[in-house]
Length: 163
Image (cartoon, rainbow, N blue to C red; front, side, top):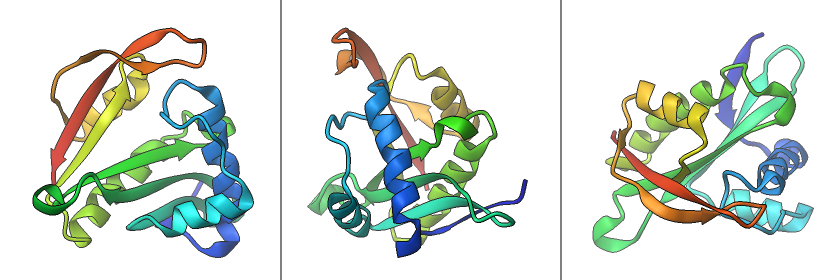
């Protein structure tokens, strides 16, 4: 499998929206509750500092994506934030690692100094292990900071990585 992470193009939008919505519908990782439509998805991905996809170079299939944007404004505008989504049927293929690694490079290219994740759900152990393996530092734990799809509350763990 030859996977390339690249800037998204308009032709990728339907796959991006589908993959994003899978994660939203799962209700265990993203804070969003509303899914994207073709119109809102186009606006959403275009409004980011950078949006990228993981594409199989041979088949053109999109396996995942990420968005990169400022975490805050003004005096904290040098800190960026990102979200990653991998399609259900390609989880476990190390797509997330390719996305996060590319994001670290793009964050620096776009002038950011720190990449911060505000709300990594504590039970998302695969993501947490990946972040820690790539050098992210956990800042602590926020008890009950994430409402799961079933209505229960899960701790969240903020992370950061100096770029």
